[in-house]
Amino acid sequence: MKKLILLLCINMFTGDLILAQNEGKVKTSFAVLGGANYQNLTGKDFNGDKLSSTGIIGFHAGVNAQIPIVPQFYFQPGLLFSTKGSKITDGDVTGKYNLSYIELPLNLVYKSQLGNGFVMIGFGPYVGYGIKGKATYESSLGSIESDVEFKNEVEANDPLTTTYFKALDIGGNLFAGYEMAGGMFIQLNTQFGMVNIHPEDNRFPGGETTIKNTGFGLSLGYRF
Image (cartoon, rainbow, N blue to C red; front, top):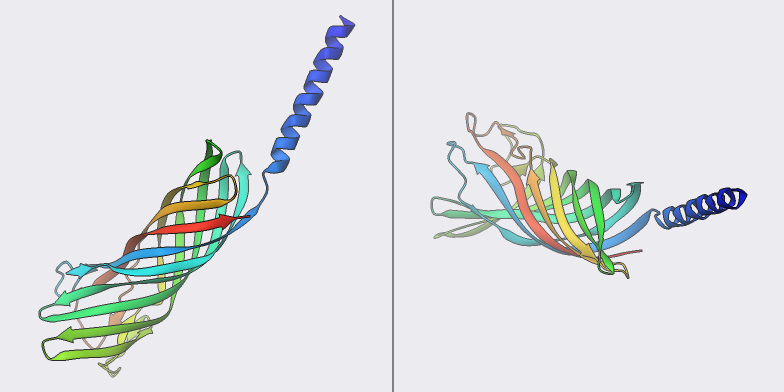
């Protein structure tokens, strides 16, 4: 009986030790990542009709941290520089919009071991802030370039030669990927803008224009 109790005590002790060692291996990690975007601006035009828009290629680059919450689940905040935009056709005029953002994604990530690495699925909100942009308008008469300024309300006397967007962009992230044992990873990302980034434009009152960022991308990175 004493031997049985002793064996049970040893088993409990060694089991707790192994568990503690495994938990000790799960710690906060960091990553650098970058890749390509395929972005679009979707919504309605001045008359309330669906925008005639097509996506353009951009890129993103940045860093993130991966903080353990419970086994297999992590909180993953990051900081990215990302380019977005679209081509929008209105009549015989096509406008190409190139917008640059600083983004803060705040994702919840699930990771499950597969082979020597991990399958990962993540989702969460992001907050973006526009820092610069350029618009190019092309027609049969030629092309014109316009700077983009970020403001919430356009005054009636603001210049017609400037294109305006709201700086603040808020939306949702969804991604899936695979992380190899050495720390290299690849993931497919999607984003859905949830706020209208078209400002109130007092130069052209009464319009129904709404514009939202949307798109997807492919990221490569290294976690350490």
